[in-house]
Image 1 (cartoon, rainbow, N blue to C red):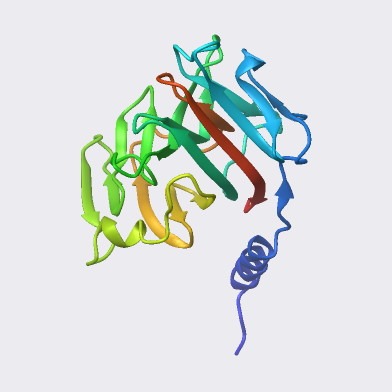
Image 2 (cartoon, one colour):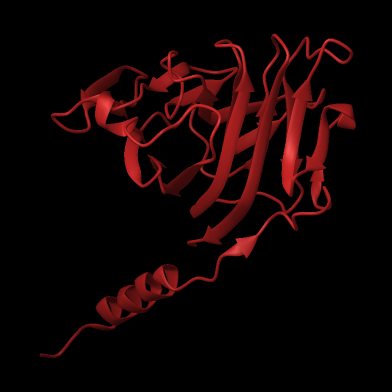
Amino acid sequence: MKKSLSFVLATIAFSGALHAEPQSLFDGKSLEGWKAPEMSYWSVKEGAITATSSKENPCDHNQFLVWQGGDVANFEVTLKFRIEGTEKANSGVQVRSQVEADGHVKGYQVDIADPSAPYLAAVYDEKGRKMLANRGFRTVINVDGTMNSTPLNAAGPGEAMGGYQVGEWAEYRIRFVDNKLQVFLNGIQTAEVIDHQKEEREMSGVLALQLHSGPPMTVQFKDIELTKLD
C-alpha cells in the first residue's frame, strides 16, 4: 500500500516519542540542578531528596524545590516517593507550572498525602482552579471552565489504592501530552485531566517538588526520570 508523506512523518514522530531516552534529574547524592528560595528545608538523605518540616524549622508557607532544566511540554516523569507525619502531612509534584516572584510555584500538581485524605494521587491546581480530578476520576475541563468528572473504571478510587502502603516507597508515573494529564500510582491509573480551558491551562512549564505548610513531616523523592515526548 502506498503511504502519504504525512503518514510516514507522523509514524516517525510517534516512534521517536516512544523511544526517547529517559533523563535522570537527581544524582542520588546532591541537590545539583535543583533550587528553592529557602534551601534549609531541603537535603539529601538515604539517597533521596528530602524535605523536612520540624519544630525547629517549621514550614509556615508552602515551599518548592524547582528543577533548573527549563520548561517542559510533552513528557513522562517517573519517581518514587514516601511521606511520614500526621494525617495532615501533604506534598506534591508540580508539572507544567510557573514560578512566581516570591518562589511560590503555581499550576498543575499531582498530590501526595495520607490516603485518608482525598488528595493522594489526585490532580490539583496550586493557586488556581483547586481540585481538578479526584482520585479515581477523569475530569474534562470545558472551554468555559466547567468540569465534568466521571469514574476511571467501575471499581472506583478503591482499586487505585490497593498497592499503596503508608510510609513505604511508592511510584508515580505522570504523563502529560498536549492537554491530557494522566497519573499512575504503582502502575494503576488514578486520575486524568483533559483541559480545554485555554485561559487557565499551561502547555509547558517547570517541574518542582512541594513541601506543604503544616505540622512536622518528612517527604522523600528518588529515582526521578524525565522522558521528553516532543
